[in-house]
Length: 88
Image 1 (cartoon, rainbow, N blue to C red):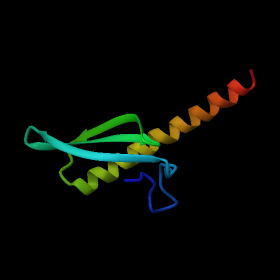
Image 2 (cartoon, rainbow, N blue to C red):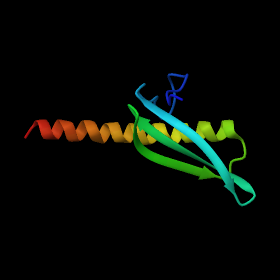
Image 3 (tube, rainbow, N blue to C red):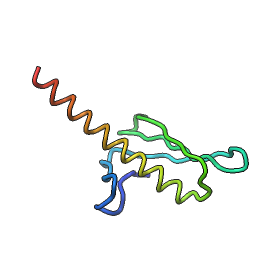
Image 4 (tube, rainbow, N blue to C red):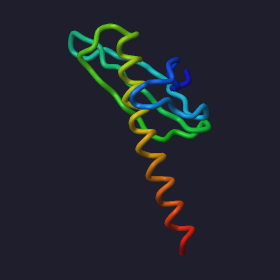
C-alpha cells in the first residue's frame, strides 16, 4: 500500500508516491505483533514494528504515521546533505 494519507493535512505529512509499506503480523504471547517493511522505489529502506494493538486497521494507521514521520526526517536529511555536498 502507498503511505500517502488521503488527507492533505496529515501530521506527519504525506509521503511521496515512490514510498510504499508492506504490513504483516504475527503472534506474540497472547496478542499480535504488527510490523512493516517500508520501501522506496522497491528498495527496502527500514522496518518498524509495534505490539499491544489488537486491530489490524489501527495498527496499519499507526505504522503508516510512524513511517511518514521517519520518511519526512530522512528526506530533510537527504536534502540537507545534498545541498551541503553541492557547495564543495
